[in-house]
Image 1 (tube, rainbow, N blue to C red):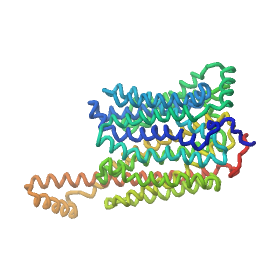
Image 2 (cartoon, rainbow, N blue to C red):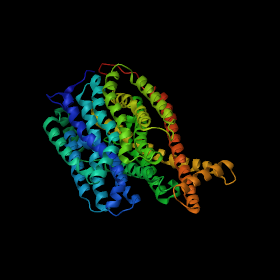
Image 3 (tube, helix red, strand yellow):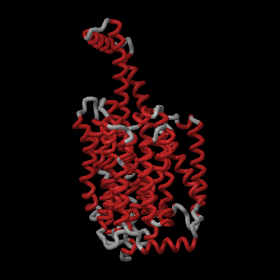
Image 4 (tube, rainbow, N blue to C red):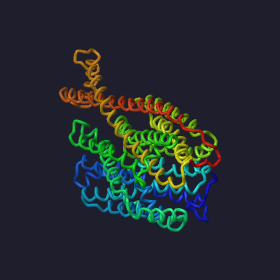
Length: 529
């Protein structure tokens, strides 16, 4: 079936201009998410709150995003895609400014919820706009341009956030969204059109069903994703199922899912079209995008932690070590867009997953003597293959979909990426804590007071502190503290290497899944079915 451009948001304008315009707001939203993680300590100190309390600034944003993303397709169909998108950008922009003016933690958390609702709704609308604006043979290049915002922003976020909070204040990580959001709104209103075909579909939808929304489906999906996000974000901190709070949250999430699936499958107009997940092509693309989220967000959060704990880097310096990785992805995005039109998605994705696994395996070569250059190079290798996953996954997800399903498909693909990120961070954090405790207990076994090697090392360290002007008692105390700190740092480093090993194994396990994708017609418009 030939591609019909009646659903294009470009009108008589260049579609690449539209791709650039809709990428602006996503870059702002994804960047802000990464920046906020860096500023938590500063926020806690400024608002007289504990760091544990301040983590709700991140958690509530993730919950709000998780709730709104899966229903964005239905809301956009009902309200109108352009109108819904502009509402989301406006809500995100205004709430960002209000976050910067917040004078207490409760106000900040409330504004972050609003910010999450606005930010979560933007990406599904943007991807649906791109899918309808570009013919299938050009979608890979369009998604490559869009992928620059999605993948590069989390990489530069930590360094930018560290620089802003060190040189100004945490408030500015929210204030900077103001002018960017206003520019985005002006450009969208001026350049992006609401196609007549979509407007006719919207009016027909309202004529058949009215303005009714599947409120029960909305409630169930909100409970499922909202409490799942709570479990993933707070599980390790609250000792998982030893906590009644985590148990209750898990139970609510599971029950909501158990009720949500049969409810949505029996609705004529479901708020989330989960039937798409039953399609081989889309379902596999969903699973592999979940993998991208796990690796991208998990490694982006833990690499700065590794550099700051094991190598004593500042927040800014650790961010700079990640910067070459962001530049590598920026350079590879257009290459992946070009290659995606020449190689079957399943082969490209399988090769990228193998390269990702090899990079994570190589990351286990990090040692206490690793230099800044070596660590920056390892980060480049870790993210080098991600563009060759993101573009073919996104392109394959829309292959063969009916045009009216692009909005729902966009929502589900973004659910996969964000949910993967939450799962990746949670799993890596849990593994890190457990393995660090294990390695520390094993390393302590080698410092028995009866060990000749320990006695000699302890004496040398004591002699060093004595040479620095301490008396014998002080020197022995400092020597013990130094040994304890060294063991703790070594245990932490080995635990991080275990996380990299796990990521490598996980990436390899996804290779046969990627190979299950069906063959697509490269450079041609695939038939809908």
